[in-house]
Image (cartoon, rainbow, N blue to C red; front, side, top):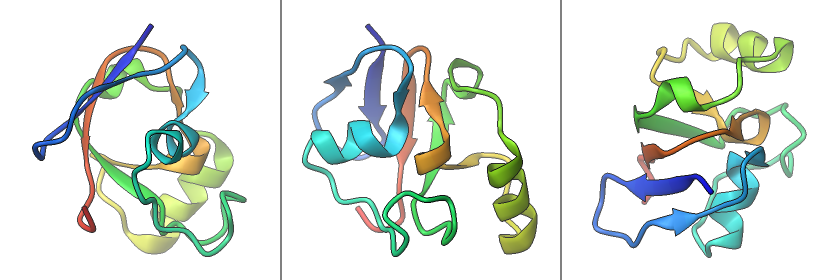
Length: 95
Protein backbone atom coordinates (compact mmCIF):
# COMPACT_ATOMS: atom_id res chain seq x y z
CA UNK A 1 0.00 0.00 0.00
CA UNK A 2 1.23 3.53 -0.77
CA UNK A 3 2.65 5.68 2.01
CA UNK A 4 2.09 9.41 2.41
CA UNK A 5 5.05 11.07 4.14
CA UNK A 6 5.14 14.69 5.24
CA UNK A 7 7.77 17.39 4.92
CA UNK A 8 6.89 18.60 8.39
CA UNK A 9 7.35 16.37 11.41
CA UNK A 10 4.17 14.27 11.20
CA UNK A 11 3.87 10.48 11.14
CA UNK A 12 3.56 8.81 7.74
CA UNK A 13 0.21 7.36 6.69
CA UNK A 14 -0.40 4.15 4.74
CA UNK A 15 -3.38 4.26 2.36
CA UNK A 16 -4.97 1.92 -0.18
CA UNK A 17 -3.87 2.49 -3.78
CA UNK A 18 -6.17 4.77 -5.80
CA UNK A 19 -7.36 6.68 -2.71
CA UNK A 20 -8.21 10.34 -3.32
CA UNK A 21 -5.49 12.45 -1.70
CA UNK A 22 -7.93 14.76 0.08
CA UNK A 23 -9.84 11.79 1.54
CA UNK A 24 -6.62 10.13 2.72
CA UNK A 25 -5.47 13.29 4.51
CA UNK A 26 -8.86 13.90 6.14
CA UNK A 27 -9.08 10.25 7.24
CA UNK A 28 -5.64 10.67 8.83
CA UNK A 29 -7.00 13.56 10.90
CA UNK A 30 -5.23 16.31 8.98
CA UNK A 31 -7.05 19.49 8.02
CA UNK A 32 -7.52 20.12 4.30
CA UNK A 33 -8.77 23.53 3.24
CA UNK A 34 -11.94 23.44 1.14
CA UNK A 35 -15.07 25.49 0.65
CA UNK A 36 -16.61 23.18 -1.97
CA UNK A 37 -16.34 19.90 0.01
CA UNK A 38 -14.13 18.30 -2.63
CA UNK A 39 -16.29 19.10 -5.65
CA UNK A 40 -13.34 20.54 -7.60
CA UNK A 41 -14.50 24.15 -7.58
CA UNK A 42 -12.48 26.17 -5.06
CA UNK A 43 -8.88 24.86 -5.40
CA UNK A 44 -8.28 25.56 -1.70
CA UNK A 45 -7.32 21.92 -1.12
CA UNK A 46 -4.07 22.37 -3.00
CA UNK A 47 -1.21 20.25 -1.68
CA UNK A 48 2.49 20.66 -2.47
CA UNK A 49 4.03 17.44 -3.78
CA UNK A 50 7.59 17.35 -2.45
CA UNK A 51 8.43 13.87 -3.80
CA UNK A 52 6.64 11.17 -5.78
CA UNK A 53 4.76 13.29 -8.31
CA UNK A 54 4.99 10.33 -10.70
CA UNK A 55 3.03 8.23 -8.18
CA UNK A 56 -0.14 10.26 -8.60
CA UNK A 57 -2.95 10.06 -11.13
CA UNK A 58 -2.72 12.20 -14.25
CA UNK A 59 -4.36 15.61 -14.00
CA UNK A 60 -7.96 15.59 -15.17
CA UNK A 61 -9.73 18.45 -16.97
CA UNK A 62 -11.04 19.94 -13.72
CA UNK A 63 -7.58 20.06 -12.18
CA UNK A 64 -6.05 21.52 -15.34
CA UNK A 65 -8.71 24.25 -15.35
CA UNK A 66 -8.12 25.07 -11.67
CA UNK A 67 -4.33 25.13 -12.17
CA UNK A 68 -4.62 27.64 -15.02
CA UNK A 69 -7.31 29.74 -13.32
CA UNK A 70 -5.30 30.03 -10.09
CA UNK A 71 -1.79 30.14 -11.55
CA UNK A 72 -0.61 27.12 -9.57
CA UNK A 73 2.91 25.76 -10.04
CA UNK A 74 3.55 22.25 -11.32
CA UNK A 75 4.50 20.95 -7.85
CA UNK A 76 0.99 21.67 -6.53
CA UNK A 77 -1.93 19.28 -6.95
CA UNK A 78 -5.63 19.75 -6.23
CA UNK A 79 -6.08 17.06 -3.58
CA UNK A 80 -9.77 16.37 -4.26
CA UNK A 81 -8.93 15.53 -7.88
CA UNK A 82 -5.76 13.49 -7.28
CA UNK A 83 -5.49 9.75 -6.64
CA UNK A 84 -2.52 8.16 -4.89
CA UNK A 85 -0.87 5.29 -6.75
CA UNK A 86 2.46 5.05 -4.92
CA UNK A 87 4.59 6.65 -2.20
CA UNK A 88 4.53 10.44 -1.96
CA UNK A 89 5.83 13.21 0.30
CA UNK A 90 3.57 16.23 0.70
CA UNK A 91 3.30 19.60 2.40
CA UNK A 92 0.71 22.35 2.78
CA UNK A 93 1.12 25.99 3.67
CA UNK A 94 -1.55 25.71 6.37
CA UNK A 95 -0.06 22.80 8.35
